[in-house]
Image 1: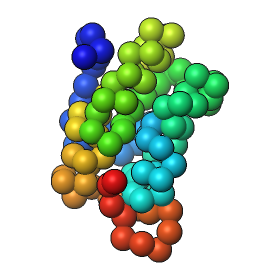
Image 2 (image 1 turned 180 degrees about the vertical axis):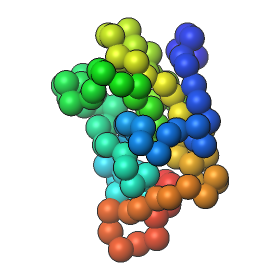
Image 3 (image 1 turned 30 degrees about the horizontal axis):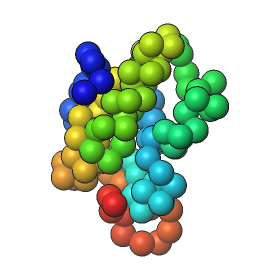
Image 4 (image 1 turned 135 degrees about the horizontal axis):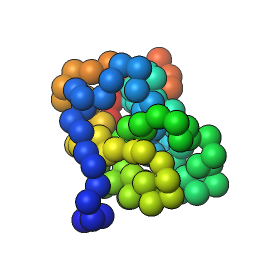
Length: 109
């Protein structure tokens, strides 16, 4: 879909890895990985300077399409990024930690 985009499974994201979530605000608020950094895909171009270039960056969205777009763009611009296969849907199915922006039970929308 986006050429040769490197990918890892959700269980391959290191606990101390830099996890970038490119979903929209409502998706983020509903549920996200506790250590993730949120930059919606539409703001990636203007906020790219916030993303470290000295380490691998793991990029996640809901199912993997938007994060694949982000990985392709960032890698073409000099970052070392990898797509998290299956996105937050796979994260949730794997039973990995999630939190919500409110007191609600975290979920993927």
